[in-house]
Length: 320
Length: 320
Image 1 (tube, rainbow over the protein chains, first blue to last red):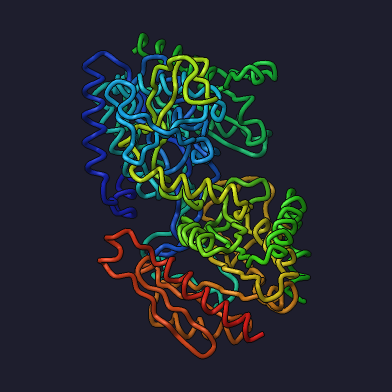
Image 2: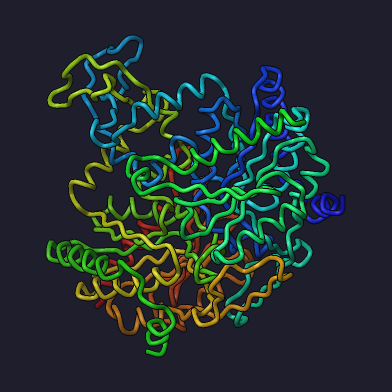
């Protein structure tokens, strides 16, 4: 309770939260009544402003790869997915082309009047095509993306700042709560631990001529606590721990499970993010590895993480 | 000198700088000997790590719009452009589609065997086309981009961190120095004023359990000083000032001109970035505005900025 009150007191609700809350509630209700499990995947880092008219901010390293990739495997497994992600972080399916300048992949082909079926050539006299060799493997990815769009099983919700993230997470939790234990939270976003309260923030840009910069930041209330206790108490909840020091990771994951009483911590070390994770519960620890051979075949560790968690979610549903 | 020495002492040269330095030197020499003016445009914000194995960092708000847009107008005016920009910030031409998920714009069209000229349909049996209505105005933009690629007048160089930016700027300045006064620097990047020296940086991720965070940051050496005095002393140099407080902007711009002895400051206020700038020199101040009507017609203030600076660059060349 204290944490939830602190949230609303310290972070004013940003514009757009209410509309997103409605979209999430509708989405969850529709898929819940169709008997589908629903997972809320959070992804990407949060921005923490240092000035109220923001020029400078603190950020967390996160491309959003883990969340975007996992979302695809959840969709494949039949879950409906609310993808709550940082604006411009990686997105399911299109993540493969994040470093592509699409203009480099396109070619102009003279149009020959009305062409394929109902599609008319552009008024410019050209069709614009993806050069066949420019984006290998595009067709099957596009087909999978189009099937997901037709099925309506992916809902995209965006945040930029920490404050937006916190309010949208609360709204998402309240949207999924009616689904009971068939709801899952997969909290892969890299959320800042620190922030500057609005009351202590300078209005204008900090002047470099004033000399070296001293920043004093408060700790962000842990939203896992009200999420598990109040917002969605029956749901299956997975948090993430990213550390750079391998000697402390298991102990820190277990401390989090004791403190928040949720079901799983996925723990990883920055340097081996894509080849090794630990799935830690209150009474177990499971290592998942991606071998070099699997990586060479294009396999992804997120497939293993998601498969592992699906099984745990099924047991959780059966036990409750 | 002190600044330049501080640079190399405080910021170790990142990998890749040497290769980029060669590319910039070749590019500048080729276009210089073709009688073309060359501008180095910097664009986007810099990352400043707070930990040496970086999870957290300080960042500056900057989409890279100003730099990417201006680069297009410099290209149109016949300049060769080195575009030194933050990884994934806006890029010339493709900047218009930054918020587009290209997968939403593509459609699969059954291929009918070998088709247009030499282009074979993809092995999947489909061609991938941009749906004609999905990306209005694409064809002329793509044509302009392809002409620039053919002409070889745009060189893309990327940075992420402050340290990469500083080293690449120095290398770029040294590459352009032989061109004398036909070289221009258009320093639109939002460079951090503060950093944490490597010697004072924690190796591992800062633990939130240690309580509130105190960050103490040093001031970044101003590279404008060695750039103007040593690295490219004959070049035409434009710096940018972004402020949130309109009452101090002109005075701060003039102080910068006195201190660094360069030619122009382009000054802007965060809230009117896209409709008003001040072009400030040691003895003049010129307001440029974009009217609502011009904005509605798709005009951009960068066209006016670039046109203004072209004329000033020509006078500068004639006077020297």
